[in-house]
Image 1 (cartoon, rainbow, N blue to C red):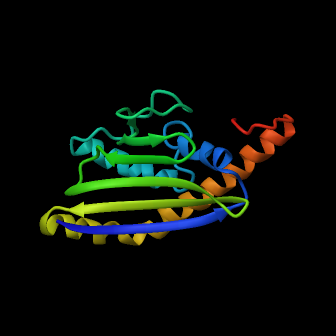
Image 2: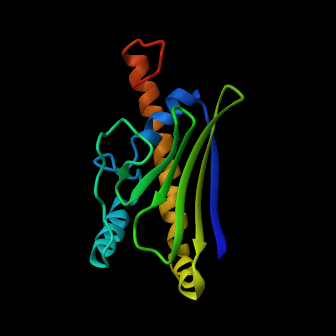
Length: 166
């Protein structure tokens, strides 16, 4: 299998407990923070070929290993630190989407990594077919997460909270 990766990271001026709030809320009614129409289209196509499509999520705020999160399954979860999703959608290979939040210089580094282990020639063709959309979708998602983090921080300040759980 050939492995393909799309890695992105950004420093944010928020502690990990604030930065992680939008990460754990991703998908379902919250959406994917950018290009939700493309995510819905991908879900529609997935359902047409026998996959789960955008199935939503059990709870808009809580995450547990093994549960469905749209056409992903939560593979690993560490509060305020890690969310790794494994694709349940129909693809010619194994796809994962991972978010890590780490403390860094008075804020946090948010790392987003999409990996795809392509199965055969069809898997390689699939990766290159969707590659032009990665900048839009994954770049936009990271920027949308950053905007949502600022809203979480603002919301906790306006409520006068010293803890930042929202």
